[in-house]
Length: 421
Image (cartoon, rainbow, N blue to C red):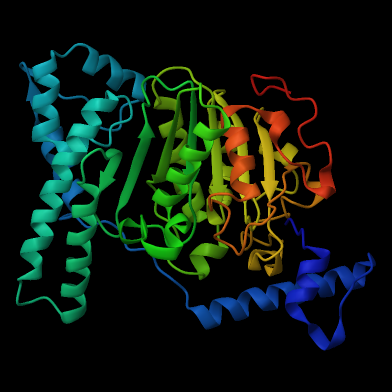
C-alpha cells in the first residue's frame, strides 16, 4: 500500500478543527491520511459514483468491426483490426490507391481508427463516418420513441457532427459509439518536424470536444488550436502538428471513476498505440491536463522513445511517488497555477484510490515550469499566458525559453537541443 498525502493541500481542504499544519510523527501522518480519505469519500458521496457506459453489440463501430472481419479485398481476407500497427501499415502498402480508397469508403469506422493505416486515408474514412453518424442522428431526432432528453441530445450530436464536417478539419480517429471518441489533427502530420499530443481530462466526449465563447480553450480542440498557434509563434520555421486526442473513455464527472485509475489504464493502451503508429520519426511531446496526466503517468513506461517530453498541468497525480518511478527517458514537466482548485485534492494513493504524489512538489522530481497568469483549472491553454508559452517552448524544443517556477529555478538544466538529458 502506497500513501503519499500532500502536507499542505490536505490540511487546506479539510480545515479540520483548526488543523492547519502537520509534523512528521507517525500518529499525525496516520491522521492526515484518514482525514484525506474522508474528504475523498465525501466528494464521491456528494458527486455520485459514476458508471461508464459499455459498448453494446449494436453500436456502430461494433457492427462495422463485425463486417470488416468477414470482408476481403482482391480475393484476400482483411487483416485483424487488432493487428499491430506495423502489420497494418504493411497491408495498406500492398494496396493500390483505389483499393485503399474502397476500403475507407466501405468500412469508414474501421479504417478511420486503424493505427498503421495512412493518415490521409484515415482522414477520408472519418469524414465518411461523420456523414453517416450525422444522418443517423438526424433520423433519431424524428423518432417518436425518443424521450425529450434523448431528442435534445440527438440534436446536439447533429450540431457537433456538422461542425466536425467543416472544410479543412482532419480527424485521425472518430467513433460515435457511447459518449464517443475523436482525435483531430492541426498541421501536416506526415511532414511534421515536431508533434504534440494534447491529452484532456474528466468529461471528455464528443459533445465536449469543442466549445464556443469564453471557454473555447478549455476544451480539447481549443487547447490544441491554441498550442498549435503558440508553437508557430515560438519557432516559425519548424513544421509542427498538434493532435487533440479525445480518443479514450474519460471519467464522467468527479466521481469514483475520476478517483480510480481504471480508465487511465485503458486509455494508456490507446495512447501508447497512437504514439507508436505516428508517421515519420519526429520527436513527440505530450501535454496532459488534469485526469489526462493520470493517463500519461500510467502510459509513460510503455511509450515510444520518440516521446521526449511529458508535460502535466493541473495534475491530481501520476500514480507514482516520484518521477523516477515513471520509468521514462522523457523529460517530465509539471505546472499548476495559483488559482487551480486541484491543489486542494489530497495527493495520496491507498488501495487504488487516488493518484499519488503531487507532480509540482519539488520532491517529486519533475521540471517545474511556471503557470504565470493562467487562471483556474482550465486556463493553461489561454493565448498569451505564460503557461501556454511554456508549453509551446517545450513542444518545439526551445527549452531555454521555458520559464521555471520559483520552486525549480533550473528546470531546463541538462537538456540538449534534441530533448535528451
